[in-house]
Every structure is written in C-alpha cells, then in structure tokens.
Image (cartoon, rainbow, N blue to C red):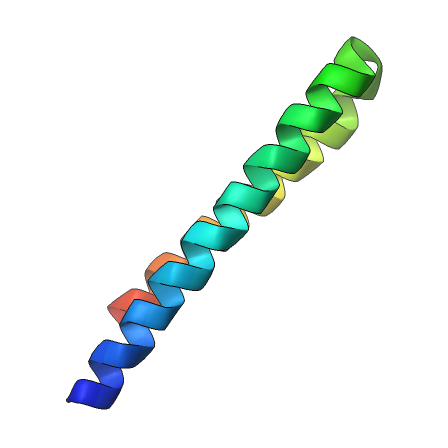
Length: 61
C-alpha cells in the first residue's frame, strides 16, 4: 500500500515539474516568437495536455 502511495506521490511530483517546464517553454516561445510561431505554441499546448492526461491516468491506476 505504501509503495503505491509513494508511486502516486512521485507521479504527481514529476507531473507538476513537467507542467512547470512546459509552461516556461510555452511562455518563452510566446514572448520570443509572438504570433510568428503559432503552430509551435499549439504543439506545446498539446504536449502539456497529453502529459496532464498521462499523469491523471498514472495517479488513478
């Protein structure tokens, strides 16, 4: 039981860290590229959603 709780805690920690990094990348890309890199921004948002969904599945498992 404690192993599973530890795994969930680790998954949440890594998920939060990944989201923070993606948010930073998104922000920098948005500032540097502004409207010229719209496709890249959408791509990053897609990655963020995928990671959030993957983290939710991991925690629920």
